[in-house]
Image 1: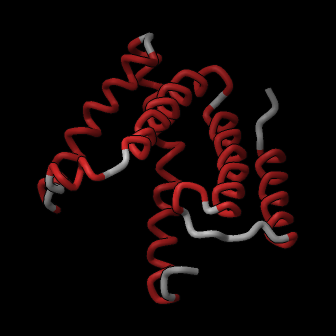
Image 2 (image 1 turned 90 degrees about the vertical axis):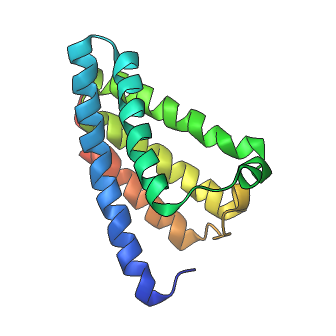
Length: 152
């Protein structure tokens, strides 16, 4: 654990709340997509509102300088493309296979990706080797995701 024990649990609670928000966001945005009859328009709407809210947070916390922004390697900004892919995918897939199924498959993908990212320390992440115990834990989580998946 990189964070001290005292700071770990508040951060974990924050991430739990973020996790709770993901299916809520997916459900709400899928509903907008259905009402607009256009999941892309719903996603653009979500991003416009998100940009306004993030801009308020940035105003409150202070913006980085242009030189700081320019110093970030361009490939690191590809995370934005992954956000767009996720939002478009969940907005389109949710009404077709159910939010639960869509999010469960997202969780399965996250388990696979995080195991590789942590094991190899990809993109500057701290290295956490994939031990047999950790692999078993991930497999149990993946089994749980599969068992919780609603039948199609």
